[in-house]
Image (cartoon, rainbow, N blue to C red):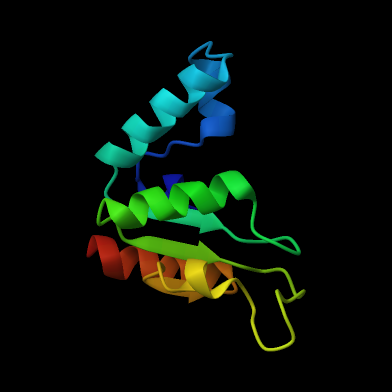
Length: 112
């Protein structure tokens, strides 16, 4: 979706291999550099609980003042009354449940 909107993307799990990075320290370094230099974070929040690495990235990006869009298409909930962890939700600019909502949020934030 982001690439179709002509946005440059970085996914640590994909790009670490592209950069031939194989140690945890190196992946962490390139990941934090990418977060420091990005204009927007899109976080996949699917699963019974948010991936711990994604949760860390959200917290780091939030502390750096980056706008974060959460995408949760998973029907499972965190608790009976919550779709996701409240600490994570409070960091999000937008929480959407579908790709149309993601596209709209990206365009609004990037003024695209």
